[in-house]
Length: 232
Ligand code: NI
Ligand code: MN
Image (cartoon, rainbow, N blue to C red; front, side, top):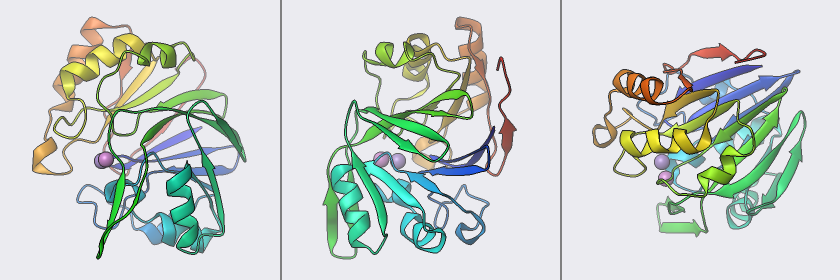
């Protein structure tokens, strides 16, 4: 399975010919090097409604005929924008998609989309435990640290993708505590260095995590793809 980092909170999965995008914020993303017209997706997972996560979802979904999975209120709003296939779920629920499943787990954050007339949709944010291509991957979305990450760790994570940027989410020290509860084989930091407010030194965070836990850290550059193989 291939995992792509597009910068900020935007990721892609490709397994068994199925393509999934998570929070595809590409146009207007200072960290992104990928044009939204160059990506395709059968399935798009949204963690919450903030503009830096919904991003190019509507455009991509219309062009590709993608199914958009999100919490109920956000899925309804995406549907109201002309996206034909949406699935609204909620916490504890597991939603099947072609090639895998996505389970809604909590995230401590807020959720709203701002249009030119102000806030047009609100609701609650989520994270996902995705099973796809023989791997179990936790997408934390935007969140602070919370003790129930222990329960998410019981899912048996191959990969955890967690924010380290601080200011809007947990910062590096709390993210290290998160790794200790999640105990993934591999952890990938996200949601940092996009804007000055979330500048972080990911390589020093990698040293901190790898000296305090058994998890390996992969610091990815926007546009980078890694292949997840057995035992990783
Ligand atoms: Ni957010
Ligand atoms: Mn965000």
